[in-house]
Image 1 (cartoon, rainbow, N blue to C red):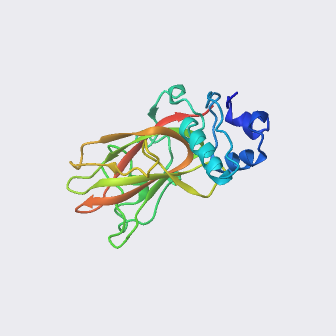
Image 2 (cartoon, rainbow, N blue to C red):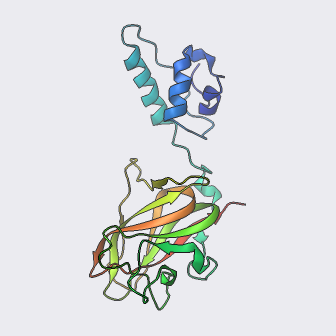
Length: 225
């Protein structure tokens, strides 16, 4: 009998593994909400190489059990604009690492606004973030520059509920995703995530800019009811 549910294994219901070390390692290394992960036979223990056997177990689980996403099925989310452009997200929930004097505060970073956010010129690691307050499924970002000033590459990080730690949006191979942004200042560019994330705060981190880093944006996703 193989693994039928990672959650069951964590709760000691998959007794066929005969090794309580599996539960501890899985809890630390693999979190999954998938109800069917692996239906094949478990790897046979090798008494001479117990560590290699455990590595094989973890590799098999990680390969067959996707990382935890809340909620897991992206299809449950009918993606739409989350409120930057239309003002549903109030000014007080838009923050940035810096602003270029009084002209370009974070609150101006609304898609199709006639103004924009621009960080201070000596800001080596600029970012702008949106506080969504409640847990929200986020599926992508729309970015827009400002005439000759725009962000050509950026990363997206986010906070989960009750966490101060920022995680990065990953690509399909589990690496931090670097998104291609704008090539024409005023033309919006949409980037959808390989997998949706659940976040309370979303942060855009420009990594490469044309002339200067000016940005307007919208977040895509759906609220969790």
